[in-house]
Image 1: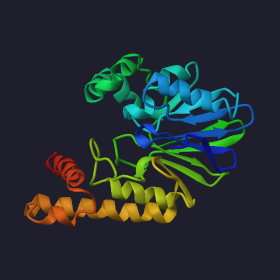
Image 2: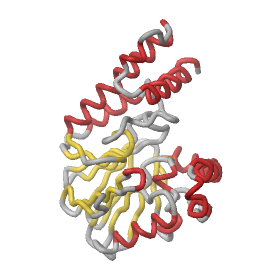
Image 3: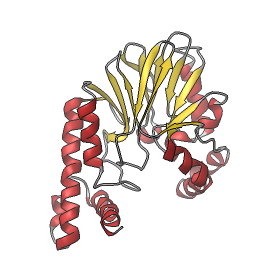
Image 4: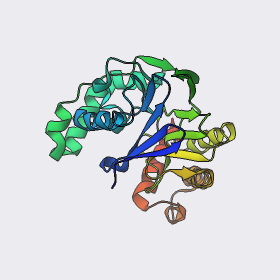
Length: 264
């Protein structure tokens, strides 16, 4: 994979990484820039910083799209500097960051030494529904549309460039990840994003940059998942697993999470 910056709007860049097929974002203003997500270790964050410095030497504001390790484990290398997130993202990182690190070391033993180096650095600026940041004269909007891939997904909107960074609310190249998701809410959250933001360029948390039609189609898939899971909760799974739009392992995880919501 060619880990070079792709300019998807005026001074709005995406870097797609081989590690987790993850995207980071860079928005450059006059004398300041914004960095979206900091990758999954200090070593990966250092690589990202080197890449940022090929585009701009400006000081930065950082935004974490949500509280999954591959999006925030690099935070410490971006201090000093503001780090923004949804309030629940900061709370989860503060409370569970150490456990996140232990879990990743267990899950990825070949990267244990790299993950052990990580210092957990929670965001220090938070919001609940929306916030607007002045990035060198460019206004960038942060929005939380509801529960979805996690409890704290945010969408970053760059209106003067017509670009939306959707985080892991949108996934390209692999099925959406349901590990700690809210499948019954996710379709409405994605629909609210589409209704509020008319842009044509959407950057997913992982995979290739997509258009509005792709997001609309994925929203329909998520709605089908929610509907099938709700019916299975009443009627039992029987043969319904084959009707889900994703592989069986992914579908069963979505069902498990939906049942937790319904039983809660």
